[in-house]
Amino acid sequence: MLVEGQDDRHFVKQIWDKYHGGSLNSIFFNGSEPPFEILEKEGFDELCKDIPTKITTPGREVLGILADANADPINRWNRISRELSRVFELRGQSKELQLDPSDIPDSPAPNGTIIESKPRIGIWLMPDNKSHGELEDFAAQMIPEDDPVWPSSREYIANIPVKDRKFDSDKTPKAELFAWLATRKNPGRMGAAIGADDLSLDNQPSKKFLKWLTELFKQPVNTSS
Image (tube, rainbow, N blue to C red):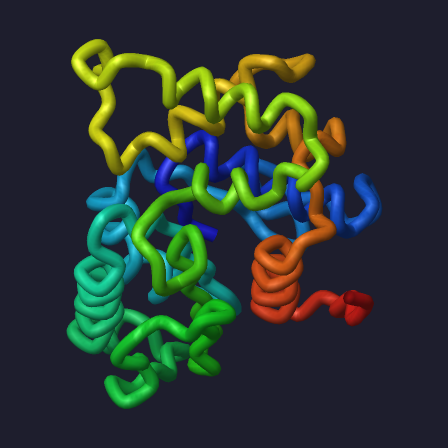
């Protein structure tokens, strides 16, 4: 799975390990340990550049792509689609490759995209494949509704005068989340908050993401709601 950065890598590892019960189905940051490897690419541009190479790697069975939608989810989707299309230029480098232009959807699926090509390709745009935002917007939805600190964290950010803020207005949700993460046992780490059960998997966003991830890598799906 290709991800943009370290936070994404830790997030995916922790959410998978928590869901699947730890060591029996655990994943690793590097190497070929089952069920899949997570590679951080230091940003969206580097992630996109690596898509054709990773798809045409001999023996590749599955490629997952996790990226932030940011301010323009359609533009992000189109950029990923263009990189998938570039694979046709590399078709001669991999006899195993089976991917047709018609396989690539015009827009992301609401519950995460899975293209049944060879290799199988999965794409998830954070937070929900349709909205503006990023990983932190998704994580904020994992905070339990009765969390006593979350309202105070949002109030803290709201009370900072606009002239004193060094972040853009569209980054306000991210600032709120990190204000909340600052109160955790391991401050500032989303993955650690999942491991400590401060971020819950018992919500629809988490269930949708885990179903997509599980189906992509063909693990048994937990159908409980």
